[in-house]
Structure formats: C-alpha cells, structure tokens
Amino acid sequence: MTDYSHARTINLGQSRLVRLQIVNWGTFCDYKDLPIDERGVLFTGPSGSGKSSLLDALSIALLPSRDQRFNASADLSAKGAKQGTRNGAAYVRGAWSENDDEHGQSQVRYLRGGKPTWSAVAATFDDGYGTVTTGIVVKWFTGTDDDSGELKSMHLIHDGHFELMSALDGWAHRQRKPFDLGWLKGAYPGPATVYPTGELDYTRKLAARIGLGESKMALSLLGKAKSMKNVGDLNLFIRENMLDDPETFTAANTMVALFKPLDQAYQTAYRAHAQRQVLESVPAGWQRYLRAKHDADRAAALYGETAQRYLRGMHLQLLQDEIARFGERIGRLTEQLADERTEQAEAERAYTSLNDQLREQGKALMALQGEHDQATAQHHTRKTAYQLFSSHVQRLGMPAPRDQDGFVALRAQLGALLQEARAAQARIQPGRRDAGQRAGQAAARHRDRAAELAALRQAGTLIPLKAIEHRERIARGAEVAVEDLVYAAELIDIAEEQERWRPAAEKVLRTFGLRLLVPKRYGDKVKTFIDDHDMRGIVDYSIVTATSTHQPQPSPRTLAGKLTVDRGHPSGLWLAAQIAKKFDHVCVESALDLGPVRS
Image 1: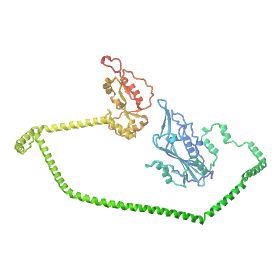
Image 2: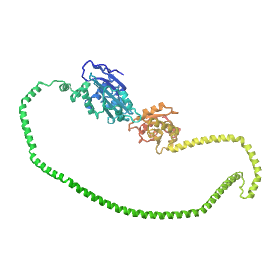
Image 3: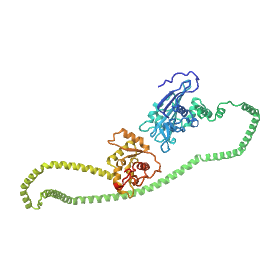
Image 4: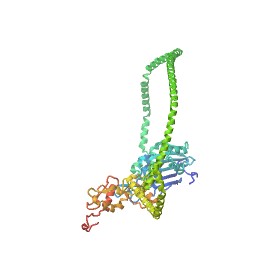
C-alpha cells in the first residue's frame, strides 16, 4: 500500500487531491489506487486508454450531477463502436463497445453485465496541516438491469484515509444480505464516517470541508476545466468565468453611494409608516386583553376549593349509584349460579345411575362378544388353510375333498403323486436354468421399454427421455426456465392434407428436431454450463437471434413447404427461416418424377 504520511512542502493550508481510488469503474476492473503528487499529475495515453474515465471518476466524487460533465467525445472508443454519451450506469456495468447487429439493432457489450455488480470512487484531500478528508461515492445494481433508473447510490465522508477495497468488498459480497447499508454503518460508525442524506447534502458538506465554499460558479468552472472539450462557446466561457469586472461597475457603485443619504431618509419614513400601520390596532387589542384577563381571573376563582368540593360530591354520588347497580347484578348472578349447581348435581346423579346399569348389563354382553370373536378367528384360520390346501390339490389335477372319506382317499394317493412329481422335476431340470435366464432378460427389456413409454406419456412429447433429462439439467445449471428451452421438433408439425409425408419428414428431420433452441439472452450462460460439465452425450443446440417477420415462403413442392412451425413461440420465426433454408428438398410421389433437382 502507498505511504501517504510524507509532509507537504507547497501550498500549505490548501486542500489538495492526494489520492484517487476506484473499484470496477468503466473498463478499469477490480481495485486501482492512484497517488497524486502535490505538484500535480499528467495523464497520457492513446484514445480509449481510460484518461477520461479517471477524470470522470474524480467528477462523480467531487461535483454535483449538474457539473459532472462526463466526457462524451471518446465514449466506447473501441474499433467499430458507436459514439454515445457516458452515464453512471455505463461506468458501473463497464460498457466498452456498442455495435449494430445483423438486424440493425444497437447492442452494447458490458464487462460486468448480466449480474449484480458495484462500483466505487474515493477522492482523498489533504491541507498539509494534518487534516485529511476522503469523499466516497458507491453505486450498484442488485440485479441484471443496466437501466439508470435501477442504479442505487450511496455517499460517505470519512476523516482520514479510507481503504476503499478492504472496507467495501465484504459489504458487497455478504452471502446473507449483500449491499446492506445498516451493516456498513455499523462497521464504520460516526463521527469518523458521515453518511449524507443525498448527493446535494454530500457535495455541500464535502465542499465545506475542503474549502470550496458554496459558490455554484466555482464548482461549475471546476467541472468545465476538468474537460476542456465541453466548455461550449469559448468567448462566453472567458467572459463569465475569467475576465475582471469592467470599470463601469465601479462607477455605478459610486453613483449608488451618492444617493445613500436620500435612501436612508426614505427608509426612515417607510419604517415610520409601517410602524403606524402595525400600532394602529394596539389600543383596541389592549381592551380585549383586559376583558379576557378579567374573565380568566373569575374562572380561576370559581375553579378553587368550592368547585373541587362540588366535583368530589358528584363523583361520590356516581360511584355510589354504580356500586348499587353492581350489587343488584351480583345478587342475580348468585341466584343463577345456585340454580345451575342444583341442575348439575341432579345430572351427575342420573349419570352415575346409568353408568352402574351399563356395567352390570354389559358383563354378559362382553363375554358373548369374546366367544364370538374367538369363533370367528378360528373359522377364518381354518378357511384359509383349506383354501391353500384346495389350491395345491387342484394344481395336481384332482378335486379337493369336502369330507373325511375324501381326505382319507387323497392321503392314500400322495405317495404315488410324489414319485411322479420327482421324476418330472428330474426331466425338466436341465432346461430350467436357461429358461430362467431368458425370462430375466425379457423382464429387464420389458421394464426399460415400460419406463420409456411411461416417461413419454407423462411428458406428452415424443422427445427421448435422455434429451428431456439433458434439457432439465441445463435449465437448472444455467438458472433458465425449462419453458424457455425447446427442441425444434416441439415447434414443427406436418401441414394439413400432407399427412402422407410424415414418415419421410420424421426420418429427414430427426437429427435437426433434437436441436435445443436457446434464446440469445441465455446463450452465454448455457454455453458456459455445457462447456464446464460432462453432459454424458452430445448436446446439439443453436443460439436463437432476432429474425425479420418478412421471410420468403418455401415452395409447396419442398419438404419445408409441407411443414408448419409454431410462429407464436419466441423462437418460431428463427426456426421457420432455418427450415426454409436447410430443407428445400423436393418431394416426389415416385422415382419417375425425379429430375435434375435436389431430392
């Protein structure tokens, strides 16, 4: 960090600029700290190197808006750029180029566009006797806007040097609540740091501290001198700001002094007349004052002990009446409470009697209910066992027995059935393993096809599941709504009465139909995400730019002429132009119609 503690040697007592700090100002990215020599400083460099940007940074820290006069002659001076007027928003965003696109629309390119960003300028002044004052101006965007109306500003005045980057970087990049003015005021409280209420209050207090005074002409002259390109008419500038007053002004002052005695006499007569007008109503007012004082004295006498005694008596009577009313109400409520307690006792006795009855009569009912539940459970168990047994018997090709004789006959046959079953098992065992493997493979293929079919039914589109997953992953990673990213196939359909060409169109358009259409405003974000991540496959996408609504119609004989495009979608016009250009294949009914045309 530069040492600013060395002593001044010239112009002691005069506040002079000794340091200029900027953060993210114009094409200057990050933090720059420029020491200013007490003898002055000379900025040199080619056009577009940033000389005017540094002078404009000093203007925004020192002068009010009306006198800042940003340098307009070198704005956006990159090769091929358009000339425009600089403003605070352009400096904060870091505008560095403005060109017409292929449709003749102006496009400004920013170094810090499309995200929240901030800029700050700090100018430090020293009077050579130890008094150091730093004026700070901070401007920021909380969103992705680049309009001046969304630009927020803050002004600070600090006693001593103010380390701009270390003080404000943490404030601007706080995770929970960036750009929190309350947090900044807590970190840098007064009186060392002053937070003016606005730009006018800031420039007034800063001018008072560094000795600029309150002259608007002095500030205007300083703003013009900062950039001699904006002074306007040179004769008018010299006459208003540099020439001494002519001698006729002195002669006029002398003539005015000669008339001073006459003017004093006139002023004396004028004051006497004014005093007469003022004092004319005093006598009548004095009489009104005496009458009002008499009435006030009588009111004070009446408001003494007599009035107080009368008021206490009235209050006592009112309280006694209120107590009597409360007594009557308490009596009524007491009687009501006694009646309700009697009813409660009778209800409790009736409840006790009914409850005893229920317990006595319910014992037998509970015993019967228990026996019924037990019998029901046994019946269910035996019925389930019989159903299982019947299913096994029926699988052997025999009727299930329904009585004891049937069970005995079946038991006699079980030995022979067991031997036949084991012999059959030995015969089919060799092919069982192969059949099981083939069944497992078939089941796996069935599950895959069922999952793909379910996904297609749920999505309502014929786009493959993998392509849909790619789109959803890109939308989440680039922070773009899924609805803004469509595949070309979702906007294309066969025109009316051309349904017979659908199979051919689907074959030709399959690869193009799986191309993801990305609006231009999301192009950089989507490209960055795809380049930085393993997409586990090829992602074919196109950046959709603005397209004229006046597009030539494709020939009805071509494949493009047999298709329709949803032109109501934001990407529809661009897609229609691409189809007309890429798919001008001539469609024929048979090979005999083929000629020297593209097929």
